[in-house]
Image (cartoon, rainbow, N blue to C red; front, side, top):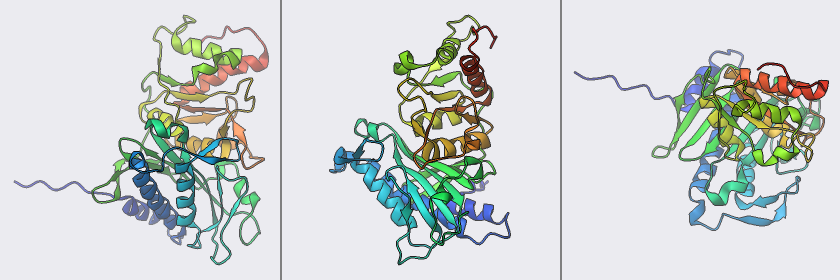
Length: 347
C-alpha cells in the first residue's frame, strides 16, 4: 500500500493561489511579496553565518533614533532596498534606519505601492545569538506625486494592504497577512524555499497564561500599568492563577511567541518615554494588523493601533499586542489613570 505524499505549498504557490481570488489583480502586489521573501532568504543566510565572518558588532554610525547601527542592520537595510528598488513595483520606501523617505533611483520606473520596513528588529541582541527579525508594511500609493511622497508613507495602519515579519531563529519563518488571515512559512534551507507550515494562524483562546514586558521599567510606569502587572502576577488577589513572565527583548521574537501561544506583549509608555518607544509605522502597525487578523488586538493602551493617523515618519507609540481579552483588560486598568479614581474594578 502506498501513501499519497503530502502537498508541499511554497510561498510562491500560496501567493499565486491568493491572487486568483482577485481577478482584477495585475501581479504587481504578488511580486512585491516575492521580492521580500527573496530578501529574507539573503538576510537569513548572513544572520546564520554571522558568527563566522566579520559582520557582527557595531559600526561607527548611529541611526535617526540615536542608536548605534550594527553591521547587520546596514546589510539588511541595503538588501531589502536593492531587492525592491528596480522592479517598477513601488513608488517609494521608508526604513527605520533612514530619517527621510527613500526615493526610487531615477533610472528605474515606479509603481503604485509603498513599502515601510524595519530591516533588522532586535539587532541589539545580535551578538548574543538571540532571535532577530524583519518587519514590513505595504500601502497603496495615494498621492499625486509621480514618484511617491511622505503622504504615501503616513497612512493609518487600517489602510495596509499587507503586513508581515520574518524571524531569524532556530529556523527562519516568514509570517504575513493580506487581510484574509495570517499564514506562516518556514524556510527549508536544503531547497531554499519558504514552505507553508502554519496556515490560518489564530491566537489561541484562552491560550497560555503568559505576559511579556520589560519589568526593569517598573519604577517609571503609571499606577494603572503597575496594577495590571500585579493582577497578572496574582498579587492583587483578583487572579488566583498567576501568569508566567517571558521577555526576550526582541520584538519580533516576543510577538511571534505571543501569536502562536497566546498571552500579551506590552511596551508601555513611561516617564522616560511618555509617547512610547516603539515605532508606529515600522513595528506597531504591521504587527497590530497581524494580531487582529489572527483574532487578537493591538492598542496603545487606549486606541486601536490601526486607527492612529501617523503625523511623522518615525512616530513612536506605546504598544499592547496579543489575546483580545488581555489587551482589553490592560486598557481597563490604564483607563483608571485617565479617570484618576482609585482602583477597584474587578478583572
